[in-house]
Amino acid sequence: MQRRLLRHSLIYTSGNVMARGLNFIIQVVIWSNLFPPEAYGQIAYCYVFISFVTVILPFGFDAAFLNYYVRKKEKAAYLANALLFILLAGLLFAGVAFYFRHSLSMIALRSDSVRLLNLSLLILFFDLLNNQGILFLRAEERASLSVLLQNIEIVLRLVLLLLLVSVFSAHIEYILWANAVSSLALFIALIVIMIPRIKGGSISVRIMKEMLVFGFPFMISGLFDRTIELADRRLLGYFMGDETVGLYVACYTIAVLIRLLVYSFNAGWQPFFLREIDREGGLERIERIYVQTASVFIMLWFLASVWVPEIVRIPLGEGRHVLHSAYWSGIPVIPVIMAAYVMMGLYFLELPGIYYHRKTAMNAVFMGLGAVINILLNLILIPRMGMMGAALATAAAYTSMAVSIRIWNMRRTSIKRGNVRILSIAGVSAAMFILLQLPGLSLLIRGFISVLYVAIVYMIQPLRIRSLRGK
Image 1 (cartoon, helix red, strand yellow):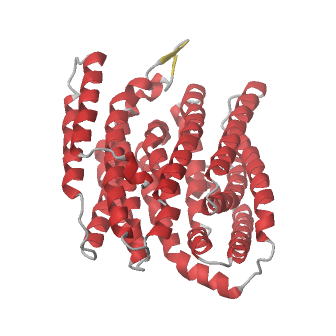
Image 2: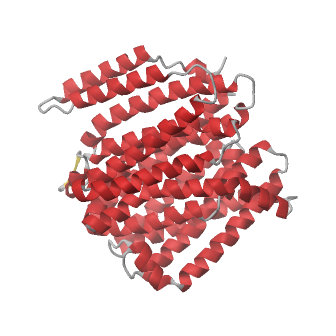
Image 3: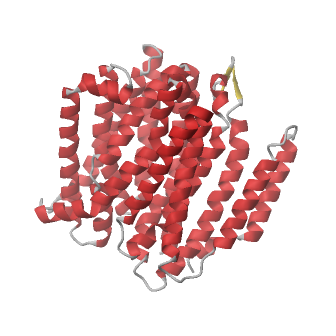
């Protein structure tokens, strides 16, 4: 069982590294060298809108589907009901949004750009269904096919974007056109894969109700999660303007490196712990995985925070860099956002506890706590600190979630915890990161300190791959 978790997590991680690498090329290298920060900020609003609605609109049917498909026998029925509900919800929302397109564009995009809104709605519709298809592949443990299809979609988007920009002009509209066509291609592939598994699955009011009751708290959680993830961009735009949003989002996208690793692990983690939590000794095994994985997350944060800001300044010739120099003022937020995603990873690692105790509604409580802290700190810090205030608000929100769920789980189980080791690694990481901020350190010295850091972490918590694979 643990061997399967490691194998699937490695598949998702390696596949998503390629996918995020391609996204990095699209959203950092190409966008920052084609568009000024103001235009980058405008396209960021489109993706804020898409991301926010994509999480809310399924009403938790996506989370419910994964739970019941893995744990129940009526697999075809759960797949058919989930697909039908999400299809109808997507069509209804798109229709209403199109009718009120002029008003909605001002609210969602901060400008009366109906064309951008219509393209965003098209991407949104396909993404809703594609997310369900990817969840189906995860539930089927077809990790290789899942990452293959997602990487093909991103390659297609990259090719289309370069083609459209070179043939027509460097206009942000073509970013959305390329995305819409690639999302359509992925949709067709996933539907072809799912159709055979839908056969024999009847539409059932009972199943619909069951999925809605289970999933609704996750919809609320998704609302809070999107608030934490996206509210800072709208508030930055309100207080600081579109240019600051463009700077922030470009550097935020670089920091998503850690988010990639967290979500890649979680893609294999969730099906694993759903099968593991009810087994004898399951919680003890989950805690061992928590300590091992948390140590890796923190170590990768340190290494990425030290070296990624150096990498993005690499020149590409003709005045261009990996990240255009016009965006460099946002680089200091990268380590803070990366730390926020580490805390998100620690939160994901604690989710088995709320499933074990059948208190899944607590997910919404913890997410709600994070959302409230995030909004309050954004309102307080952005006017005073700008982009850094938004980054600190995000980190504080995810930290509050990770700490609160950890304490909640500790009070309900008496298993041995690895808190001392985790806190020791976090302390060493923070201290050595601060040390590396001293001016005048050469790359050789920075490299030596990085190697020394890895050795210290290994002494505190040896990474035992065999403990993850199982014997």
